[in-house]
Image (cartoon, rainbow, N blue to C red; front, side, top):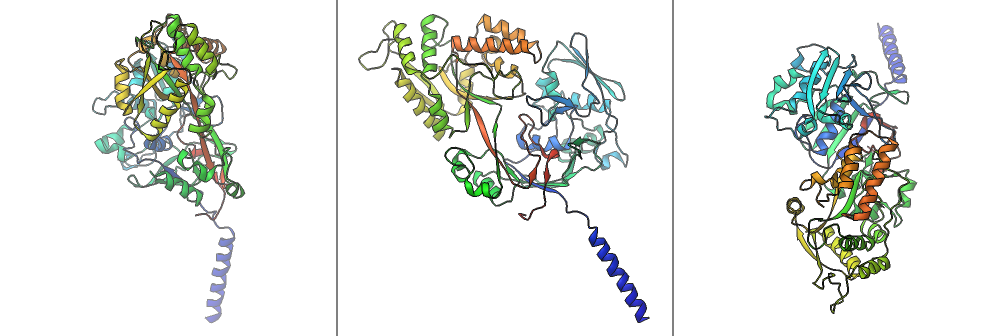
Length: 553
């Protein structure tokens, strides 16, 4: 009996050794943070960055962006191919993949629920539901009809051609949801996010910690020979404080850090924006990333002092542009983390022409000569007067903040150097924007972040009919309007880029804006993180990421 027990024990030990020798690899876990708390995870409703970041991984729109393509490029996602266009570009026909399934939920009563064209019809029409008050309904203002032709064929008809329409179909807002889930949970559907994406909710402690688990039933999708998603789990914390994010990253608690805050730049970067040597020795990687954002200072073209299209008014605005010290702004204010804006279009936006050269550069001597030539003489005060001898005092609105006050001093210095007197009116940005839309602001520095990665989204800011809305400068030039209308009907092409260059030349000629900067985000990643590349449009890249084994956690 004793020998039998010993034999059994030896067999168990041998089996244990064998199993240990073929142990399952440790799960691949990404440690990430979101800078603000999320809201309900419903594609039709959510509009904050934290929620959109999560939705992108839980739900599926028809299209998505090629992860590595620059400039950006749309590719099929749940669509089997890019759509067929007909009816002069007004009708889009999508053939859907037939291997797309929702993650399991009690609402499906045990069925392995396939996503179909009817689901997309239901999901897109939900945006019209007045009870939801969807912030994304405007995307479908131009849609005349949405129908399922058959189980896997979706047709969308537009009222007029829109070359940017496909960008809307790559946004989280247009993802597919299941009718059964919405009906089962009603107003609480956003607390039960059941999608077809590469991840599903594991655990969720509201606005604190979220765990996403790999959806192992996710349709076959590969990236560089690896099936997606590569990770097994994503542990996400909500970290609102700048300092906590940076220190957490430096302690190895987070695998990447996007956008090092300017106030903490010295902690991680040298004066010339290189990685601090001790961080470089640890293998931490710095990846500067130009965001799709443009800072500009606009001038009200309807203002009696600074507006108008006569030569002397154009000369005044052009002198202001020539007096702007871009190099000082970037070095002192942006700490080197910005590019000079040559046109309204940041890098990576479709239509950006890297070969375009601005005719405007910092040249206070030329600015002074231009003002002299057009009769802006200096009075006893040392400041210039209007050509008719009346006083000339510029009024620039600014934000009531520390950064706003620093911007005021930069502008005061630049404008005083060319003999122009300026006063500043500080207020909350929301109030300034309200007043701007009413035409009661003379000058204001603001910025625009791309809604979608196309030049149209920026050049529309100076289109005449948009005055009173996003066209704060109230610029209304027939030559500009005609070119913009022509370009708007065109897709990305050399012909459209040439038109965009002409629009940029008109902006430089009439100067409704002083183009300032495109910010650069200083992104950091840990040495064990693989495949990381920030995308210009998508909020996250989690499905493509991989992690090596390490001991930081």
